[in-house]
Each structure stands twice: as C-alpha cells, then as structure tokens.
Length: 386
Image 1 (cartoon, rainbow, N blue to C red):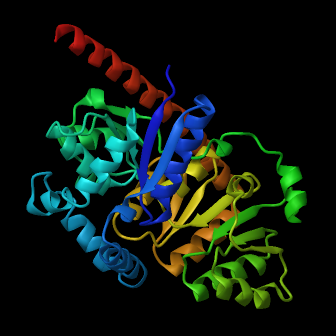
Image 2 (image 1 turned 90 degrees about the vertical axis):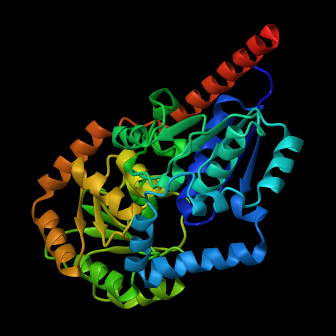
C-alpha cells in the first residue's frame, strides 16, 4: 500500500468527538506508521464569531438548561437531509473545506462530528468531492444530523445503531458495527496492585471511581462524603479535571474520613484508574461509556443529560452493565445497594464482558483501510472501461 494520506475531522463540542478522532489516529499510526494523518477542528473553518456563539450556546444549554437541550435534541432528531435547516448546515464552510481537501489530496476522510460529515457527504452526492468519507458515530443512538446518503461508510457502536441507520435508508453494506473507537491503551491488561500502590490505595477493598469534573459541586461532595463515611469499607478516587474549586472543597471531606479518598485533577491515565476500580459513577458520554465497558467496569450513571446521554444510559442499563440514578435519592439508594451487595457489581462486570469484546478502534481502522483498497480498485476499473 502506498503512503496513505488521511484527513480526520472532529469538533470541540464536547470531548467525545475529539477523543474518538484521536483514537482513530492512534490506531492508524500503529497499523501504518508512515501514514500522513492531519487532524482538523471543524470549528476552525467557520467564522470565529459564529463558532464562538454556537459553542457557548451549546455549553450553556447543557450546563444550565439540560431539559431545553433535550427538547431541542428530540425535536430535531428526525430532520431529513433535504430539510431547510440541514441544507443550511450543509453549506457551512464548504468552499474552505473543499479547497483544503484539494490541496492535501487525501486518500480518505474520517469524520467524528455530524455537521462536517453531512457537508462532505453532500459534496460526494454532487460529485464535487472524489474522496471517500467515513463517519464515526460517537453515541449509542442516531440523531438524524448524522444521516446522509452520501456517506461512504459508517462505523457504529452496536447493532441497534445499525438498525436505526437502515431504517433511515442507509444501505446495510455501508454500515460496520465496530464499537466506538477508543484509545488502544484501554485494551491492555494492567497490574491492579502496581497501579494501586502508585495511587496509594489498598488493592483488596472495593474502589469507586467518581467523575466529578462536570458535576454539581455540592452533590459531588455529598457523594464523596457518603463513600468516605460508609460503615462498609470502600475507597474512592475522584477526578476533578480542571475544577479547582471542587478539588479544594474536598479537603474538608477528607478530614476525619473513615475511608480513603484520593483527589485527582486532570488525568491522562484513565485506563489505569478504570483498571483499579470496581464501579464508576459518571455521566453518560459515548466515549466514557465505551472506555468503561471495554474495561468491563460497571457504571452508575447519574442524571444523564436528556438527548444522546440519556440514550447512552439506556444502552448501559439494557445490556445489564450498569444502572441509572435520576435523582440524588436514587443515587444514594443504589450506592448503598452496591456497597451491601458486591455480587451485584460482579454480575454487571460479567455482563459488560459478554457485551464488549473490545478492539473497537482496530476494527474501525481495518474497515477504513478496506474502503481505501476497494476505492482504488474501482477507480482502476473505471479508467480501463473509460
């Protein structure tokens, strides 16, 4: 195979699109170390003001008005590719995209964000773009913004997502159930005792991992306090991300705590933290869900945001690999249940292991490479016929 040139488009509307793109790139470089891969942010091709306003509106809705976001999500979920809104979105930045693509001359374009996927798919339909477009759907559901007949190939999380695409008219042969691509580092076995020693925790007692970076500060503190005050031995790891206020506020929780609490800021070793944990308390982003399930780590999803997170949480519950708490009371009840009945955690771990075989990025990239080969064969045949 000649030296590959691959463009990867993502967006910073939530961290999942970016992480999926990075996982694809990581796997491409493992399989083809000489490949030239360029990773671009969709928003960089838009007006800075427009991009800033849209991004701010999105994050404000998610943070302060999740129900309003959910209403918007579900009302737009069935938009047709030919709708007025979709036609407007399909025009965003397309001249600049096309110019860049023509200069780069890629063999393949990979999109982990729906808007850019639809823009490029429309260019494919119009025979303006000659490069195959692959779309990686980063949730366990399909919003119609992802759906476009011009996409050459879809990489999807599960059979249910495949069925949704088929129901929207996408050809079965264009859909590959690979799992959502995550970094290959989540696939390897990690020595639990070694990591526990590094973190200063005891390897033989239950460990709950709390993702607190985007949660309500006071509620997160109460979750940690319930765990640190538990009569049943349990230790907690909380990831505060860049939330310094949360990080410092947990000092008082640690004071006179019965059980250990390890506070962490931003981390880049989530695969290690998941490897030493028995349960993760988290939101339901598609990438976080996939990372946890790949590690066969049961999830306790707290207050999923209406829309794609809610659908991701339904998926976790449906396969039996976790549970969902929609109120603080439900969360406390489930925590008490899991602490008193550790066998329930083991049952969920077993179901995660059955449902998830791992190697999602590897499968996705293998299908991408097959598409390149088949496209090249088709082009040579066209040249001969011509």
